Amino acid sequence: MVKDRYDVVLLPGDGTGREVIREGQKVIEAIQEGSSLKFNLTHVDGGAVYYRDHGSEWEPGGREKVEKADAILLGAVGWPGVVRPDGNIAGYELVLGLRFGLDLYANVRPCRLYPGVVHKIGDEFKEVWKPENVDMVIFRENTEGLYTPAHGELTRGGRTEVAVDTRIITEKGAERIIRRAMEFARRRSRGAPEDGVKRVTCVDKSNVLRGCQFFRETFRRVAQEFPDLEPDYAYVDAFAQWVVRSPEHYNVVVTTNMFGDIVTDLASVIQGGMGFAAGGNVGDQRGMFEPVHGSAPKHAGKNEVNPFATFEATRMMFDWLGEKHADPRLGREAARIEAAVAKALSSGKAKTYDQGGKVSTSGAGDVVAELIRQSA
Ligand code: IPM
Ligand code: MN
Image (cartoon, rainbow, N blue to C red; front, side, top):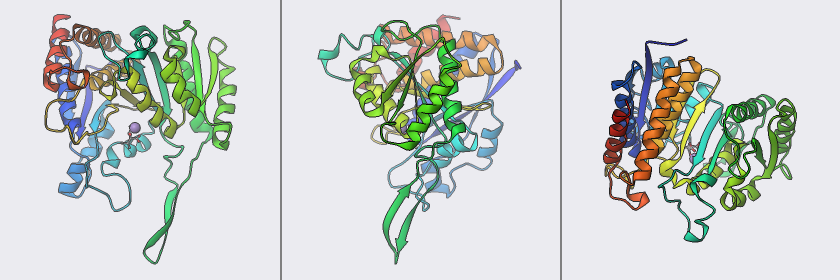
């Protein structure tokens, strides 16, 4: 249902998360200026540093505000030296807590090299990593696998002797992420850069792991309902080299939680680095969007990190909200963000340090916000 105003909670979290969310807010405000679309933007404080200072990961009432929001934009969590006694990372509630708590089972991570962006590996691959060759979306299962909270230690006499994590793959968990990836591939206007084929690649380790055999079996079964798509298979170890050597082969990729965590960081190097990697954590009802890079303590407070992953996360949030509420204005505004981002990047006027430039985080935000205003 179309709404007059959408409630968006901004969860800056820790470190550079706070700096990039400020720029995300700038972009949302620039969009509002030239549009009938309106947002209530609410900041909720929390994370590792908050936990260190207040003994709780959420500001009072913060979790309730998040529960009620139409969408969530998260910065990053984690801070050196801040640990929780239960062994979870400090900031857990904002990331893993919400993924499980709101059942955000799909972690959707586009990997696309924009014209003007420098990828992060040596020059000899210049020809392979042309922008037109890098355009895939990786679907990472987000609520089970090795992240299932079926873990613990065997501690005897105060000494930990064994630690164990149990990797759980359920039919429900596998089926819904696979289905989601295939539905996305069906709706996507383009296929793989290599040949335009609407390929969906199942990444697993089914030559060894039972859970992966089950995941692949489920993939085969669901694929029968999508005869318009080309099913494709890769073991995760082989995928790690192919995604770098032949990114043009990939269109939509679906994988389990831990593998998805790893291969999306790996794939980020062919899209220009973690400064460009964004993710949507989406379930059937709720959505939380975030840059995939962490709180980057080394860079925090310097106004130097790349905010483009946050702009991409913001664009994804608009797209998702637009589909959920059948509000075409949001899709149009998402396209306006994308166009401004593409223009900012190809002009070279928003190059942050990681791209060999000197533009600050807020400077890059200003460039994109100004381009959005011009496109009103
Ligand atoms: C990510 C991050 C998280 C994860 C951490 C911060 C818990 O690395 O979103 O990829 O492991 O999923
Ligand atoms: Mn990660």
